[in-house]
Every structure is written in structure tokens, then in C-alpha cells.
Image (cartoon, rainbow, N blue to C red; front, side):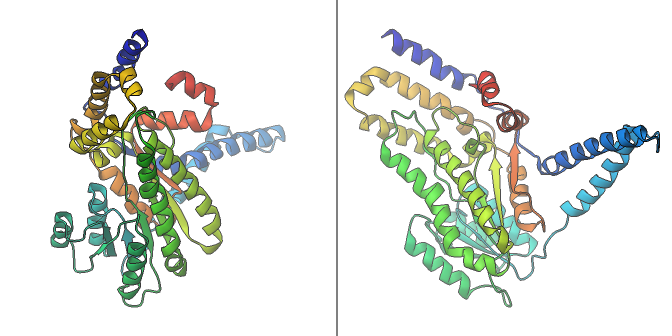
Length: 375
């Protein structure tokens, strides 16, 4: 009984401390692109000033050299960063076009002049009708459930038959189909983990395999929508975190393999808040939680207690389902850049400042430092 009370007070406490109005995500792409070159310019300035002063060739200061090196570097990077491809005659496939993020990027790419193939589980749904009204005649809504082999192959055939005139292949594939489950590891039955893997991981793998020949023809790109949870873990989200870590690894492997073909593989990582607002639905999550509760062994249910189970799930979902609507602008901008930039970044992180700092700590400092600060 005492251990149950401790769990009951500890686990919901983290959720209770969550704010409904969290800071919005920010696009960090320019910072990510400029940070290392600027640091390199500083190092070069210090070394060159030391050599010149030691050899008495010049008494120029390292700060003077740093100023000029940085100015030249930033000017070059700004030109390099803003080069964009021409949208006319290029086609893009977007999976999961029936969710909020998918609809947003479909509209954005259509406005830019791309021919967009919007893959949906049900092309006759309300979202498909809305997109057709809002977009141009270049939009194609097609049946695409990424867990069904026949849908993927049929979509490939449809895309080949409806490419823009003169196009040799597909410019980009955006793997945006998502499915999320919510619960502690001990609660979640294996079929839920399997469903998360089939949609988020295996679906992206199979779509990439089938459409890569079309992408290679035009030296296009594969864009995988992941999440900050593909880098940092969160309680109650083990199924989603596990598969997103796997998608990160898959993307890194594919990028190395496609480099010789001139194909870019880009990862776009929305923050946890945006991810939750896009994928989590209060009614669906609670219904799923109830089904998981009923499937648990009696002994486990007695250990946790129904009150603890319901309270934990409801409180943990509250920031995502009750908070204000998230601004998808930073994420859709990152996706647009991944498709449109001539030289896209390997990774776009549209996350909050706190999430960005945590990722920097995790990636660049010993793991023990991260664990002391965040675990």
C-alpha cells in the first residue's frame, strides 16, 4: 500500500507541474547552420593572430581577424542557405496528409507551385475535400495506408502515371504518417508497441524503399518527420519514443547510403508540445487507456489501482489536449525548407529553448551530466 501511494504521488506530480500554455517552438535552422562555422572562424582567427604576432609579420589582433572572418563566413552562408529549387515541374508525396501537419505542408507546397500527392487513409474524408477546395488542380489525393503493401504499390503506380509533364521522377517524399500511444510500459500490451512500429517506423521504411528509385532519378530527397522524443525520452510515451529513436537511426543509415546518389535525407523534429497537439486526441487516448487497463492482469491492476491509472493518464494528457492550439508555423517552415532549399540541413529542430538546450546537453556533454540535470 505504501509503495502504491508513493507512485501515486510521484508520477502524476510531473504531469501536474506541466503548464497548459507552454512556450512555442522556434525554428533553429539558421542558428544550426551558422554556429559551427562561426566557432571555426574564431578558432582560425586566434591561431592566425598568434602566428602573425609570433613571427612579427603583423600585430593584428585576433578580434579583428575574427570580425572579418565572421563577416565573410556569414555572408557566404546566407547566400548558400537561401538558394532554392524551382517548384515548377516537381512533384512531392506527403503521407499522413489527413492530419493537421500534413494538411498544413500540403497547402504550403501547393501554393509554391509543386505538384502534391497527398496520401490519406481515406481520400473521401472531410480533410481531403477541404484540401481540394483550398488547393490548386495540381493536388492529387490518393489512398495510402502505410501499413498496407497494396496501398503503397498502388500509390507508386499512380504517382508514376501522374507526374508533371517532363518530370523524370519524384522530387521529395515526406514521411509524415504518425500514430501515438500513451501509457506506462507495464500497462501497454505488445500489440500497441507493434502498431506504433508498423505506422511510424516500418511504414516510413517501406514507403522510402518503394519510392527511392523515383527520387534517385532526380537527385531529390527523403524527409522524415520525427520528434524531439526521438532524442529525449518522456514518461508514459515509451511506444512513441522507441520507434522515433529507430526512425532517427534509419534516417542516418539511409543518408549515408544515398550520399553517392546525390539524394538528401532530412529529419524534421517538432517539439514535444507540437507533437502532442498534433497526434494526441483526448477521447481516443482515454478510450485506448481504458482498453489497456482492461487488458492488464488483475494483479497489476491491483498494484496500480484504477484511480492512479485514470488520474495519471488524464493529467499527463492535459497539456496536449487542453492547452492552446500550437503554432505549426516553425514546423511547416522547416518542412518547406527541407523540400525547397538547394542545400537543406540534415536535421531541422523546431523546438522550444528548453528542449534545444536539453538536446545540446545530451549530444555534446557526458550522459551523466544530462541525467543529473533532467532525469
